[in-house]
Length: 405
Image 1 (cartoon, rainbow, N blue to C red):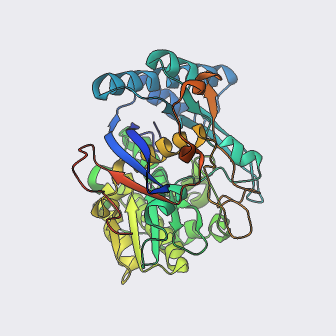
Image 2: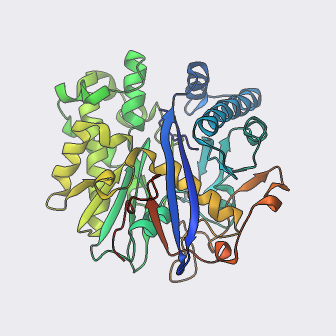
């Protein structure tokens, strides 16, 4: 289960993992259910009110930790009751704070959502706190999705593929048999959603209805593009602590108030498209495969495609990868790996992790601590994984992707 920086929903995936008998390094994931559930309205608004630039105290964080746990517990119980049981729940929770130092290293990261409440509601163990071990090893703790990207698309495809996710924050991965390069690219939907919410109370500009009536302000765009964040090398990470609701006002000063809402949104769409395309171009891919909520924004999609041209922009679903459930699928994969003592990050040629950590580490903490003693495993489950095949719920159907080795 997963909730990202956009706070749009709780994403959930129910996946049955097994090893291929004749190729134990190939992991098969039979996708039994992928979907999303809405946040309870009061919890979502309380989270939004506590995120930067808002200030909040320890009592607020404590109450949110419990409320997020209750929300995830309700989703887990409902999905398992409707679609069948599971051996383990893996939950990312909700990021409340990601502390990036001025030099770009990460001091700490905090994801909330009381795992004990989830375990009690579902009656099965919960793997949680999936970023802290990487940060403790000197890593960014983000993005974690390159592991999934590499296992699905790397090494079995002659094309040089860049994989993009546009959530609240955008992140990208260059996959393949050579070194994996990955990191956060900049704001995805975060600044857009914050501007719409501040002006209208609505959570987003649905179908870019307002942004499509606006005009990009070149002076404002130039100021926003001058943010030093974009000069940091990959791997790098960021979040609402940097791209918060006051970010545009801080960067533009009085000029921010002079922009109409449609012009501001058009400018922010262009900011997201330009910053993504700039980093993608540096990676020199032959195609870009994209997912996340930003791909539902028709203006952002068209502007990004224009900046990437002639490199094609493909939706992940076109390759059989469920674009709207991809991050929940990642969390399920991290749950399997963590339960079997396998690292949740990729090893680079120098031995470090793709996040910049000193080495790949096993991710997650377990609630209750003794629960996995009952997990049925084979020797293959504890061996390395170099490929992931996604299978539909019907066993007679073929793999989603890839279809050929």
